[in-house]
Image (tube, rainbow, N blue to C red; front, side):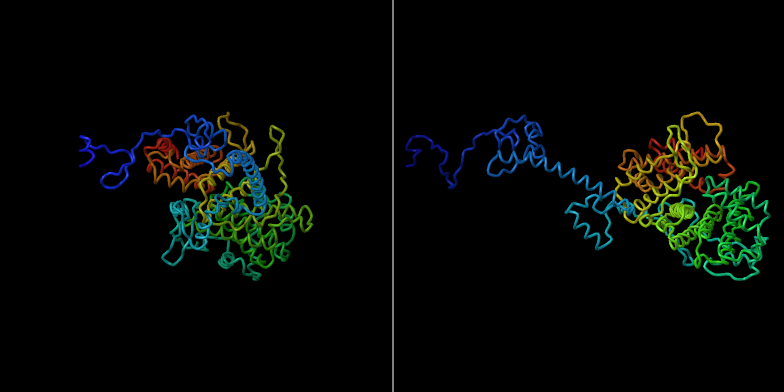
Length: 604
């Protein structure tokens, strides 16, 4: 008989007894869920049940609250005493690392425009070693790089096998007419030059021409002394803002006076005289190009340019290089840039090639090195410095206009800036840069932007924002600032008005190209609300730059239309600004910027 039957009632299963299946069943007792953090429970401290709690914050371990706990050694008190010391040591190390990074950044800036590898984001993270090794083994791209594959530029391929590359900062009109081919001009266009002389002038500058008849023809085309003086005066006048003019005493005394005092056909046989003749013809060509008494793109200016090329072939600078020969090549590049009215823009392309040739010649005579190292006299040092920074400015901006790498690297440049002969004192009594000194200084900033933001490696967006700040913070002399919100000045010379426009357009065109790929990405991903996109700062920045380029040209055009009508740069920049406005209207019609962009398009 079972115990239940023996007691006269049902049997009761007690805790710990074995049920029929043989398993021990423990009775579940109700318990409390812990509400204090793990560290307060370990140390048996009162916890205010916040996350993080006040106790953990005071002890410096808020990062592990509420689930984590400190690992202790032989005793809790010893661990807590060491934690405070560890925090002090971490702070000391952090300050030391910051100091070392600042020192390394200064050293790197003295030798290169590129940031030091140890100063790049994630450079000190050992987890990135495998990623760096993988990148070294192959051209793998990150997801962010893949987004901007089309930001590397455009390659055109012609039916005749020709090709041409336009980078991401290339001027818009170059891309519009990129595939178009235009045959070279007919030599019969130049009525004052013989076909033989035109053939010599259009030949390679590396080849020597020793034909005495051609030389006589070149020298016989020198204008009268009165016309030559008039053109030299125009050259110096426009040199205040369109190019860096030769010093007046050097132009009139050392070049014009020497050539016109003697018998040109018999006296200009030495190297310096030959290069001086070429340089003088380039002075005439640039002055004729902007002479308001002549039509735009006049044949006279083209003929002076061809005569300068022919004169340079009598003593090719590749064999014997002088400062005047490099100066003549710089002016040739500027002339081709200013007079490029061909649909295929091949003349501007030749200007880029001429500039590269001049850079090689400049490197060949050490223009990039501080001339004081060879103990040259002050005048020679200033002349060499002046020519080098003209060359650097021309190379940087023409390369920027095509989106191609500049030929000069600042890592090898030791040449100091020439002394500023034009002293300006502002209202606070401080000396300000002249216009040419400002353009040289800013071209160094542009060079840094080009090498950092427009190379093959896409920089982090934080780097782009830093470059934006660097451009905006670059100082502008007070007299060359556009006075927004102030009463219009009355006695302002045309030269100063164009200087103000050029200074403004230099910075705004840099910012527009800097933010262009990120603006395009925002249009593709979030056109309905551009400003809330992760690249919203670039959207606003490129809109403001486009607006300023358009408005700046409109206001300057009211005052000096004659000069601006003979330049292609202002219209190119306004075209870029108009394209930005058009994209905002057509691709993001519901955005807050669309209405204002449409109004700006009407003004254009």
